[in-house]
Image (cartoon, rainbow, N blue to C red; front, top):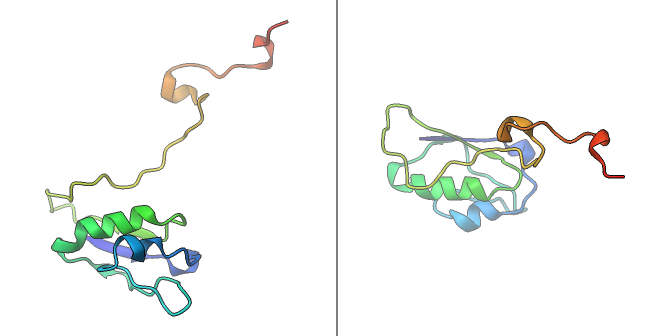
Length: 101
């Protein structure tokens, strides 16, 4: 597994290091200083947890497709929380003409 750090997005929350201090480190101002690169197999779960904790999504996880045994945490995914997302529910969104009198 490899991590890609998008430093320019870091806002200095420090959650990555708080959740995974064995993988991520911060500079003296509180911004991520960890370099992009490979993660040792025994640190993969920790790397996922730290990446998931970042509110700015600074850390991108790149899995080796040959590795069939990922850590037992779910990778971060983006999903629409819009209750009127018709594609997700097989429904059409309400329109102004559906209002009650």
